Amino acid sequence: MSKKTTHVSATPATPATTWLRAHGVPFTEHPYDYVEHGGTAESARQLGVDEHAVVKTLVMQDEAAKPLVVLMHGDCQVSLKELARQIPCKKVEPCKPEVAQRHSGYQVGGTSPFGLRKALPIYVQRTVLELPRICINGGRRGFLVGIEPQVLVNALGAREVDCASPQ
Image 1 (cartoon, one colour):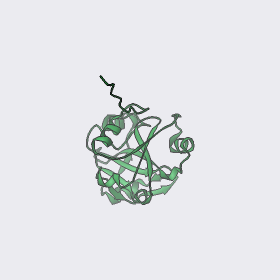
Image 2 (cartoon, one colour):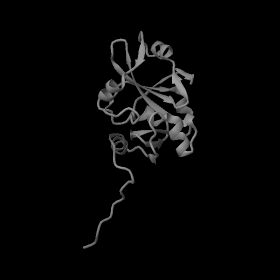
Image 3 (tube, helix red, strand yellow):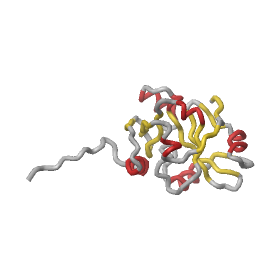
Image 4 (cartoon, helix red, strand yellow):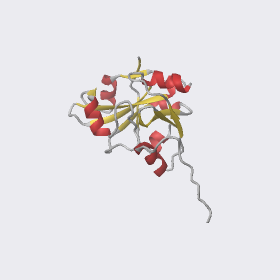
């Protein structure tokens, strides 16, 4: 009998990578050494990529405490006032870490827009979609995946917004 060999990724599957595979989305894996409060600057430095192309996944809520996700360049902040105007609602604010974790199913610092615990509205900064390739969290701390940004709209259904402000 011949032995069957299967390719096993160096990193264990996450809900995000499982979702990407199930939806036929090609991606590359980029593990790095997670640093508490290092953010996108640290992951970009370790991986040798432009921080502008590292996209952070932010769990926020509106004035009725309804959760939503914003995908933003690593080197930018979200203008909460501008986001609220565009989506539209009265007010948007970041969720507390424990609330964000409850909504997303991911630990803060490892939140991915793929494989969320429950369906949430997802908004993406328009200029993210202009990049040739992005790195975004792959579902755990210290792990990014590289994808084409159009996946965010085509496979995830993210809506474009223009709410970036410099850090």
